[in-house]
Image (cartoon, rainbow, N blue to C red; front, top):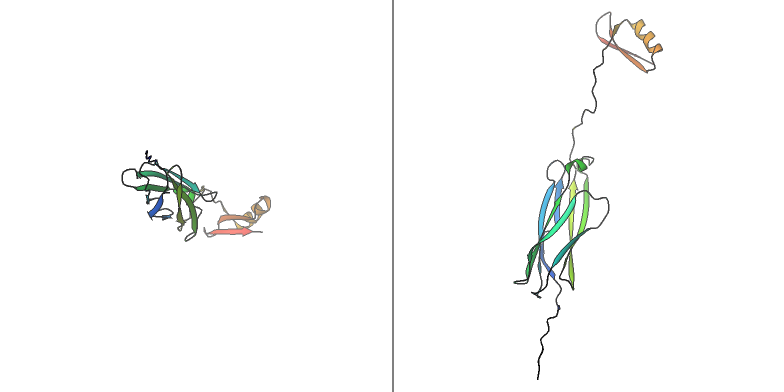
Length: 173
């Protein structure tokens, strides 16, 4: 009588615990991390992890790596990180929130399990910025000179310093 014992991958990995959400805040928090704990009773399996964005046009990147391969005790873990260039978030209005979902898949070569990771990006109020600044000499002239300048210029208004009293005045069409 010959008895043969053959190793068979009969158990898919399973998620035990997951940090599956994260919050990014423009101008403040631009990188976060979390972990996913998994179990696989087949101790000899080599595990891999893959991340796929569930949509297009996302800001930032989510990456993941095995932290514990589950080969010694059947318990493994994956660490994930998300980071985004803050310059890419400046268009968000205060309180505006974007939700980005990713699917993190842990595979043992024969079977796999997936965990959704959701990142919420929230905008903040940005102070106005001076885009261009230039010095302009304001001419001193009489009102009649300013009206004549308006007629000659291709402009809807002329700002001038009134020769009579020194204050700024404007004539316009």
